[in-house]
Length: 263
Length: 213
Image 1 (cartoon, rainbow over the protein chains, first blue to last red):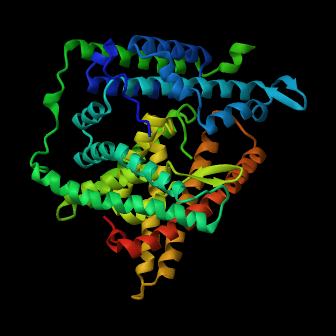
Image 2: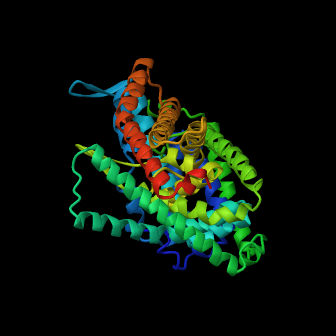
Image 3: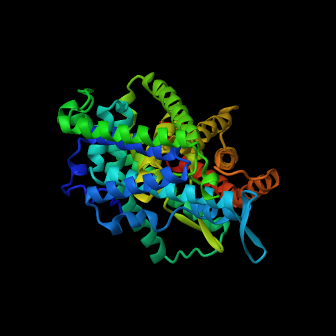
């Protein structure tokens, strides 16, 4: 199992240096502003802003392609079918299918918003280690139980993933081949999942004892001391919030009237 | 069955976050009422990781394959920890694999997490009467798995189709809902059967796990 979201967290760029708490707040506000956009001109603006953020982050281009190369099936289905299913203004015909302007614009809107939100979201979590991102969430008010659960689950994801691949290998070595759906096959998959669940349950009992021995539960303070914000961090946050507000305002003022622009 | 970024209007994604915050708050309140709430955190966390890993298993359904969701079983095994666990799992899926999304995290948590809580109550019905039997476990396990994924599919389809930034006529919308529901029927049956097998397996191997975290 490959968990490579933060493999470039060690690079040095303005985004990497930005305080993780401010970055979390700023970029989340920005992606929500992106999801507000419905106007074609503002859509172009968010594509440019996204490109700028990605270039500033210094992440390699092939890195983001990992997330964008295979967009989810839902996005593909919607983007490929909406131009034929939605709207009334026919602008072209492909055989018996009519391409409709409203559907085409809606598909464009979804595709661009998807790419921009995913890129900024991935940039947010790729420029800080996931551990620090969770600590930043805790510092921002994430409940202690949630933060502890997230950190512990993250800690064991890789190990349990390796357990699973070992179990799958040993199943294959013992002759298990599942190519069709059968009750026996489902039972085997259920027992495989069950074994993994029982193993992790048993391991958790040892983990808890080890944690208690190391003083777990003695302190519940928020990890404020781990983050040191500089004035420049606040300045960048302010700039990002202004950009987000400008996008929303522009979109409202332009009245979402995307059809009128093309006519 | 996660809604990706970019499709839903901001009102729906914000409502998803508000609903998720409310359910998480309620779950955490219930957890904190326990005598020592911290004792169960490692258990719930490792199970969260295990469920995350289990969802990577692909089950062949020719000509394609499906992956398990098991939100019903999460409800049965984790109780009030199920919703926070699903929220954390979805967050990791979004940032590690790009399944689901950041703006849609709240909506997706409601789609997957609320049915898990319903499944926990469905399975609790099996405790009515004092006779325990593998068949009873199996039947209620199937119901928990089937109902949970069925509710998830229903919420997913309705939220997706009513929130598209395009007008579909009623006939197209009904056809899409029908097609999506039919397409998910095999998954619902598989989830139900696997949950039933798993509940019977756990009753034999580690009955304490069925008592909830």
